[in-house]
Amino acid sequence: MSQTRQLKYAGLIQKDLSEIFQRDARHIVGNAFVTVMGVEVSPDLSFAKIFISLMMVEDKTAFISLLDKHKKEIRKALGNKIGKQVRIVPEIAFFLDETEEKAQKIDDILSGLDIPPAQDEE
Image 1 (cartoon, rainbow, N blue to C red):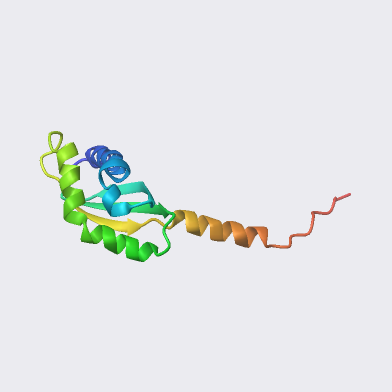
Image 2: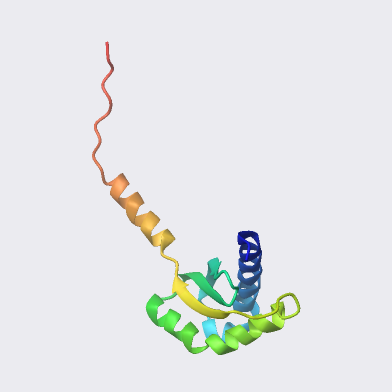
């Protein structure tokens, strides 16, 4: 299976899952702001890792567990959206995207450094 096909499939899943979380799954996510940061699809297109960023959520690990509990319902909604464009709707797994937290931690470390100004060389 070509890499291009995987990327196209991942983009389709990312776009449609974002819409599902904004509109159709409000009863699951509540007031949480869920962003689908990325999707990785297996070469045979049967499995997708969904990377999610969360805002306005106290316990992010518990929220991922909540999504796992409703995985069948979310996959069914995804199938309703992409079913005519693909042969199979992949199994899905949710993962917390920690890129933003890691970037903030690095930014905090860098801003806390005491770097003396460079001296002029004459």
